[in-house]
Image 1: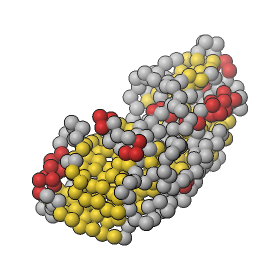
Image 2 (image 1 turned 90 degrees about the horizontal axis):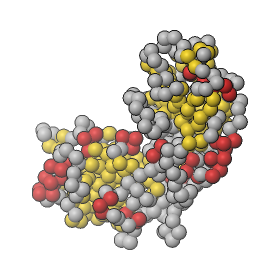
Image 3 (image 1 turned 60 degrees about the horizontal axis):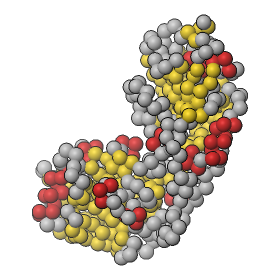
Length: 422
């Protein structure tokens, strides 16, 4: 037996791939034939850009190699993301008692090391989640692991306890990009979902042609050439979050008066689909905002009844970001669309019904579509880029209970930007 630290071994990404799910069709993010495109976007996905967030949408690369193949203790790659938290890569050696994790938390790099002695967590360095490409180097030096950004050391961590015994001839290391492995039982302290992109990797100066082959054969494994902040909805699915996530802010006005406050910034590919809906525990839609392509209007409903419409602004399909602000309070609805404001009354029964459902256990907020029992046609799904605040809280789709696998939580193609492309 030879004593080795498992951490540097985790930097070797060279072995046959294993998949935890089947690949999705390559054209799932593109408009379907015959769709009336509202505004086009740049959907180019070069084969050298690796998407890290396929744990819910397609195959996750899991690599195996023998310890005897290790020739270098240095690995580097470039990372680009707007996501403040998630797993960059994960690996274990000899089972899940000895593992290593490189992640982001609150926009900073974080290392977690677990062996049979203890768990050590260290974070630091510059803000990473700004959409810029960052060169990251991870290396083993004596009993420490060092992380560099742009060749400057930003994190250094000592392995806890004694080094782990490793058999160089028989032991195997597993590596997963952007996720832990299926059926792993460790308790993570970081949200694993990570909307990020890797390029220009050099895994300890070893051949990475297998990774290249994966990218060439599967478009779902690739990133867009240019991205901008926002959540991307492909027009084929929805996301749902527990309404209780939005209880704490702006739920009252005056003295004990409940209100619902929404802020939507969006840029549609299609001028149709559900933007927002409140759904009770029985999957009844209590409130919704929908874009009606035929009538060219926004349609607002309460308990299945239309109580308001608003014509599309002339610039809806111009490629410019649209702003919609809605407040429901004291049996009144105030709707601001662009620079125009409109006020209308809501019946006391309807307002009280929405208030009651919002405060019930099991109520969900749906974005981009409705629950499966409604089996809506494709035109009922929103296709475009969206950012939203609910009750003053910015929505993070990594907190979603339900999310279609092709929805990107923190990035949109460049032509759908809510800012400057990266």
